[in-house]
Image (cartoon, rainbow, N blue to C red; front, side, top):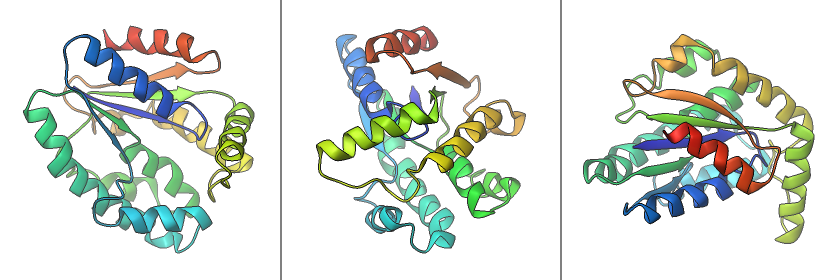
Amino acid sequence: MYVVLEGIDGSGKSAQSDALMQHFRERGGNPLQVHEPDETLPGGAELRRLLQFGEHRAAYPGLFLANRMALLSSTVASALQAGRPVISIRSFFSTLVYQQQENWPLNWLIDIHRMLPVRPDLILILDLPPEEGMRRVLQRETAREGTPEFYERIEVQRRNRERYLDLAQLPSIQAMLAPGGRICVVDTSGSKEQTFEHIKERLA
């Protein structure tokens, strides 16, 4: 099973990914957790650096696609073939959401992802008000003495939340999932525990 966690910044993707890992382990599985971009694969480290300051944004779709293809064709495909559940923080869905604000046409962004070697069985869009998401981001960055990335701004997150919810309804996006795959929106405005209960309901 290939599960993707999506959502605006501060929506709880990392925390819920960890909870899913524990969930699968308790049931005898050997899950794999991945994160996009993967800094150990082509383009990953460069993307992480560029995202910090919003530099060379015209290069993002190509860099993300190269990094994603490497991750899916090697790490993810191998794990799934071995019967391991895979939990991914972000996927092609993030590119469709974030790169629209750079004026890349949605149809083009979809087209360049049609040949992905692995498709998700379940995409969970973690949804909450952007104001709460930004509060969490600032709290996180203060705790680790960091600074928010270029896209971690309230006006960007408001637009991105709308895009997430709109894209979840499109048949063209549904067609990018594995046969029988689903896209589910999960309310994450409550506690981590409440959110995970909602997630478990979608796993059934």
